[in-house]
Image (cartoon, rainbow, N blue to C red):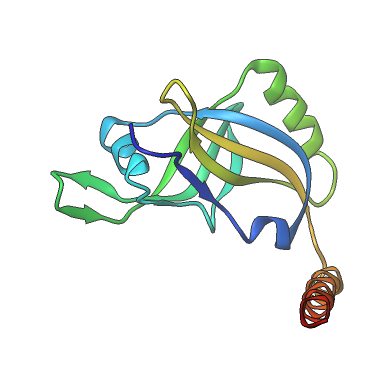
Length: 149
């Protein structure tokens, strides 16, 4: 097999306070798992919702694998595999105001199964985001000063 496959939602930690982590399996077809192994997937604008007491990841972009040359982009709704107790915990957490479920990382584990790392999260306000930017810029300035001395 090729190297590690990690498809990350980089904006998630900037837009949300990440609270509790869960790792879920995915229900995929053969061509979808092939596309993920070729890193032809994107989870930047995705989110999770409950439908009939089952958790689904919406808006995941997996380019459909047709032969080896052509790819077709399509946003999908994918069922997540979690045990019953985890689903009950997540549903209870969602009852709180402002809590959502955000996919952060799509990866393939050691056994070759695709997994999705999801977090329960609370949205950040604009002033929280500005504070993060200020801290990052200050850290860069300090590192530059240390490097020049």
